[in-house]
Length: 105
Image 1 (cartoon, one colour):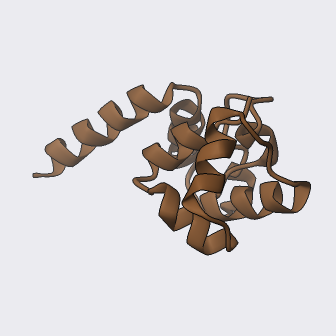
Image 2 (cartoon, rainbow, N blue to C red):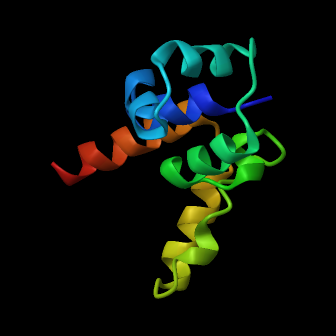
């Protein structure tokens, strides 16, 4: 199962944004999201890079983004927060982000 739609919506992107980046049509992206067609391996790699998620997360093999290892100089508290954030659903992530934004105002 491709998590493309959930990730795209979580990041505030539209199908046309991804289509432009990958030199595809929005209809192609829609077809991937609905499972009518599947992206090539090359397109999957480009999607994962563009969306800043692991391939395993993108294709639904894991519930974690898998990109924390690339963040080098962060405190243990920040790393733990990222690990916990990656374990919650996309809908809950949006709620957490909303709470943090409200807290800052």
